[in-house]
Length: 168
Image 1: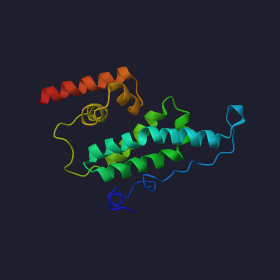
Image 2: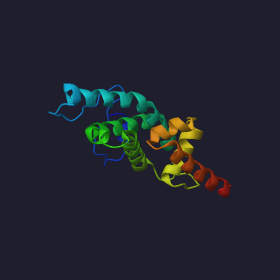
Image 3: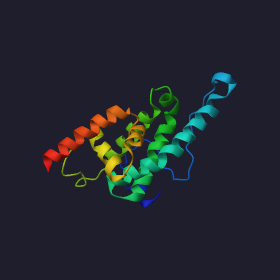
């Protein structure tokens, strides 16, 4: 295990895999519409999800934890955890929201004392500021990453900016 992975909380319920590693999905004996095996469909959708979000999750976690290697490890830990819940995530309205909740939960558990910001925003408001202003994502992309609508993202982001302007 890498040095940065060893620094993650011991309570993580999953192994940390290297960035190039593949995560395994739980076995399934069912089939999807059209006769395609459910495992093949789930595997392909999971791999596409990882390809879309892995780098963004790593950048977000690195920004929150102030360490690039830890960001990558946390992103992999979140995707590993999500792999075990992937069929459940697919049944939800927004698999991206399930993934976001997973990565932010692991990030929160990994934050060291003394590294929290001076201005304390509620979690999702803080996330909008990090995604938009630290990572430079367009609002539409940031909303997609969080698994929420553009209007919900805008509401959270505006509330965060109001709070920050009052604290300055």
